Image (tube, rainbow, N blue to C red; front, side, top):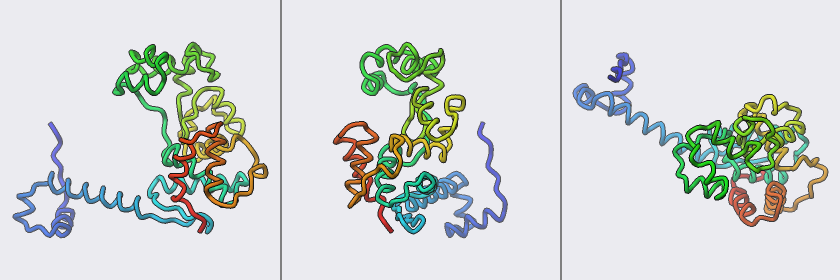
Amino acid sequence: MSKRLIISEEEQKEIKKLYNLSEQDYLKAGLEAIFKNIFNKKKEDKKSEDKETISSVDGKIKVTGYGGDKLNNVNIFIDEMNKMGITDPLQQIGILSVAAKESGFNTFKEGSYCKTSDSRIIQVFGSKLGNRCASLKCDDSKFFECLYGKNSGKKLGNTEPGDGYKYIGRGYNQITGKYNYQKVGQRIGVDLVSNPELLEDPRIAAKAAISYFTMGKSPESFPKFDNKENAVVYFADLNSGSQSQTARTNALNKMDDFNIA
């Protein structure tokens, strides 16, 4: 049995005023319909915020199309780039565009595949691993051990039982495997091997992603870019490890979210 919702007289007055309801209409509509309207209104307000938000960060980069937590994460990215000496606006736009296509500025931990079809798992992980591991998909520890563990055939540095699940994809760009956790952790001065869950923290995840996107190169080694396109292509190639046209196109599609203020 669901709990009955009780609201105060003041809240009732606010609802009546908000929707211009008479006492009779209020009683007739019922609380469920009223709260449904309020919830829908909040969703529309949030969509509008995400669509229209424009933020100028440090007077250098204008960010368009991000609101709420996503905009906050963009700000964290820029702050961490500045701390790492990546202060050139075009370099920052190149990295931000790659981050946008990788994650949309959501931090996350690789989730369960229990409700994912076997065919989709095979498509994502390949026929060999997909066919071998799909039957385990509703047991996260066994499934990820099958995909990423020491006997998976993947060279991820997972050497101990349980490493496959312990070092699943985390952060803005789904860093996976003990070796990558260790390598990126050493670059940013954080023990990610002992504390893999730290990659779920937006600021540490930003440091890790920037380090990964730049392959640990110093800002002085980056080219001097004449335009955004060249910067985006450079960092898309650096991140993918090749001249992938798909990676370039996806990053370029995010480029107009960022402009020099």
